[in-house]
Length: 372
Ligand SMILES: [Zn+2]
Image 1 (cartoon, rainbow, N blue to C red):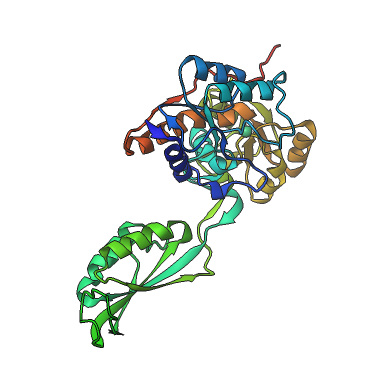
Image 2: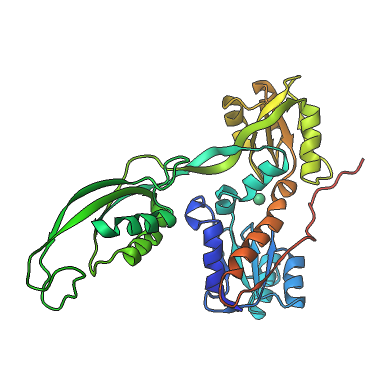
C-alpha cells in the first residue's frame, strides 16, 4: 500500500506535469493525495465500464490518459453520464488521476510508443512546445574533495552536453572564510581567518533536476556551509513537443507502410489518403487527433503523416500539399501506451516502500467499426 501522493509523484517522473499544454487538465481529478492506494487500474478513458470494473474488483485508483473532468463543471448532475460516474467514484473512494498532453509529450509517452509501433527507429519531437531550461552550477570545494563532489553531481545527472557526460570545468584557487561563534568548521577554527586551496567546479544541468543535483552536491561536500552559485542560462535545452518525426530504416511504398501501421497498432483498419506515388521514408506522426498539423508535416518534408480524426477537407489539403496521410484512428494510435504506462508505473512503484498492484486495461475497444 502507498499513499496516493506517491503514485502522483511516480507519474510526475514518467510524465512531468510541466510538459502539459496550458488548456489541458492533468493531475488528480477525484480523491485525495493522502488516501491509501492498494490497486491501480491504468486505462485510456474513465468509461462507465472502467468505473464499474474498478468498483467490482476493488481498485482504489484509476490512472487514465484522457482526463475525466476536462471542461469546468457548473453542476454535478448524477442523472447525466459524467455526474453519475463521479458519484460512483466518490462513493467508493476511488481516486482518478490523468496524464494527458504531458504523457503525449514525455519521452517514452504516447507518441514514442506510437513511433516504435509503426517502425520509426529514432524520432524527434515534431511540434516543439517547450525547450528545457538549463542552469550552471559553480561550487567551491577543498582540493582533496573535488573528485568526490564531481562524481556525486555527475551521478545525479549534471554535466551532460549532447552525448558527453561528466562535463565539468575546474579552476584552482584559494578560498577564505572566518568561522563565526557557534560554527563547527570542517577546516580552521571559529574566530580565525582561514585560507584553503579550493577548486571551483563548474557544470551545466537541466533546471528540472536542480534540487536532485544540489542534494547530491551538499551530501558529498565536506563543509558545514558549502559555497555555490546557480546561474540561469540562455542556452536552449532539450526540445519537448507533440508528435514525432523521423525516418524509416528504408523507404517503402505508401501501401506497404499503411499495412505496417495497421498491423503495428493491431488496428482493424486504417484510412489511407494517397498523394500520388511518393515513396515513404520520412514520417511525421501525432497520436490521437492531429489533423491540424498536416501542413507542418508537409513543410518539414515528411512523405507521410500518421494521425487520427482526419476530416474530408483535411484529406483534401494533404493531397494538395503532396503528403500521404494515414488516419489510423484516435483510439488505435493511443491505446498502446496503456500497457507501456502500466509497466513503467509498476517499475517505479516497486522501488517505493509498500508498493501497489498495477493493472493495464485490455478491454477497451474503439468506438468505430467498419460495416461494408
Ligand atoms: Zn486522445
